[in-house]
Length: 207
Image (cartoon, rainbow, N blue to C red; front, side, top):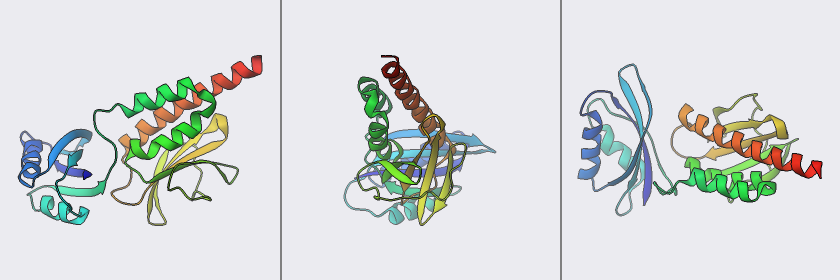
């Protein structure tokens, strides 16, 4: 089973090694570590681990939280396999078929963001939806910039696409709210997809 663990720990030599050692002692195989932030003497890291046998997120959290100075901010299942370069795969697919750019984006975002589903909403209607997404969805607000919010027991990431009149929404039921590093990554991907889609539309209009 693949799990993602978001851990806040003291930002000092050996801190990361302590957590890695504890995960190894619990039987977890660490596949990837992503540093999300380093501020005020603490670091926030996302660990992607392969965990043998069934273990609930709460059990994993309880075991790690017993370490001095360590806070577990979230544990949730993920399907993203580290090292597979999903960002590049997505953009290659969009470049090959820009007319389907936003449909491809919405299908890929849950895997990229460790989330359950994603939709693209315009004028109150769902225009594109990934697997497991609701047929209808009205975001709690439509901001002018990318943000993350808690709503309806979901963690939501709201990504505006001004040029298309769309808002892309990514939803996660478990784990912590989306970190600003996750939001910035997703926003950059959305911007590239929007640019490719706009160029395709411009070329078609020119013909």
